[in-house]
Each structure stands twice: as C-alpha cells, then as structure tokens.
Amino acid sequence: MIHEEETGYQTRAIPFFTGVAGGGRVIGILRDHEPHEGVVLLSPAHVARLTEKKIEVVVERGLGEHAGMSDLDFADAGVSVVDFPFEVILQSQVVAKLTPFSLQEIAFLKNKQVVISTLETGNLSIAYFQHLLSRQITAFALDYIKDKGGQRVMDRICFQKTCSTGFFHTLGQWIGPLLYALSTGTGTRNAIITQPMLMQSLYCFNGIITRADIAQKWHLPYRVFFDHEWSKN
Image 1 (cartoon, helix red, strand yellow):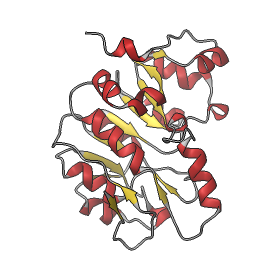
Image 2 (cartoon, rainbow, N blue to C red; image 1 turned 180 degrees about the vertical axis):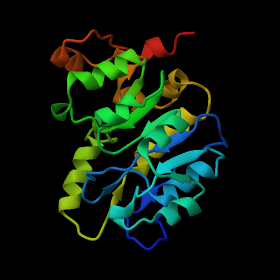
Image 3 (cartoon, one colour; image 1 turned 120 degrees about the vertical axis):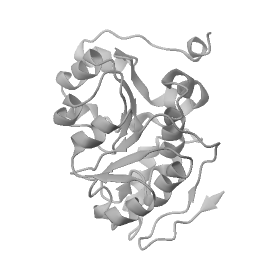
Image 4 (cartoon, rainbow, N blue to C red; image 1 turned 180 degrees about the horizontal axis):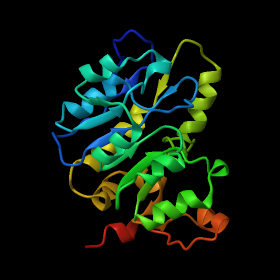
C-alpha cells in the first residue's frame, strides 16, 4: 500500500510494511548531529507503524529537526523522547542511526546489542571495529542494502536528492521492516532468515566480522555466512 505522510513537511510517497502485532526488544533511534541533507532515517509516520504494533521506541531529542519534524511529532507517534544518546543506547536492544556511530556512542553499547547505520568505512578507525568485536555486537550497514533492481538504496537516494527540492527522503520503506523483524523477540538469527535485506547488510554478527573487505582493510578475523547456514536447526 502506498501512503503519503500527512504532516507539515513534504516527503515522497512511501510503501508501508505490514505484520502482526509484536513486542520484545526496544528500538532506539539516535539523532544525526551531522545529518545527510535531504535524508531522514524514519519519519513520525513510520515510527507510528512500529508503536501501533506495541513495539517500544526511544528517540533522541532533535531527531528530525533538520527536516522540520518536531519532538512533539515523534511523541505523538507514541515514542519516548530523551535528551542524550547514551540514554537511547542504554534503554534499547536495537539502535539505529543514519550516519555512522561515533566512538563515543559505540563506547556506550551493551554486550550483544544490535546496531544499524550507514558505515562509510573510509571515515572509521580500527577502534570502531574493536568495540564491536569486544562486545559481541551484531551490526548492519544501510550502505549495502539494494533495491529490486540491484542499485544500492543510499546511492539512489543521494542521486534523487540532487534532482529535487523541498523533499526529504525517508528510509522507512527499507529500515522499517528491518527494525520490526529485529524487535519481535524471535532473535536476530531468525530476523536475518526472514529478511534478506538483513543478510545483505550484515557486516558483524555477535562480534564476528562477516565481510572480507572490512576484515582485510583492518586485518581482522572474519567468517562469511551463507544463506544455507542460517536455515540450519
């Protein structure tokens, strides 16, 4: 179904995901202090689709201010709005952010937490990955998600925003189903099995690097997981 968000800001039409009511893990969404121009991770309308399914969501204050989305908009969508990133991280099991996590944010991560963000490996250091490994983090990169045509979603959005004005592109179409799958309490492994985009975007599973390019760049051990391995009992 195509839904156009009826709010004070203007966005592209977005298909909403569906599913049965869930619960379990708390989802946290961090503010981007250097936001991507014209791109928003999740709008209040997307977040509402999660809270309507009884999923608890915590967001950092100012999450959508660069796109004209107020904290009140998010509060009205049923989320908790907190002041600091460490509050979001400590209250959540799954933490999402559009831009890469900073070392300060990574330092607050709990053991076996799940994180989703863009990666931008050229701007990261080995300390970033060492934190992931030492805390057995499972991490997904939005950079690796592709649409049905095989084009990377982030590349397409970056192209589109140069061709339009007055629009903010949300990633809710892609990240909404992923957050829903990760939050339902059936476990990260099962979420990966049911959501191919999670397998596509996985680069660290329980502290094990799963992409050769990352492992080789920082001289880290890694293991490549294949689809059939996830379906084993």
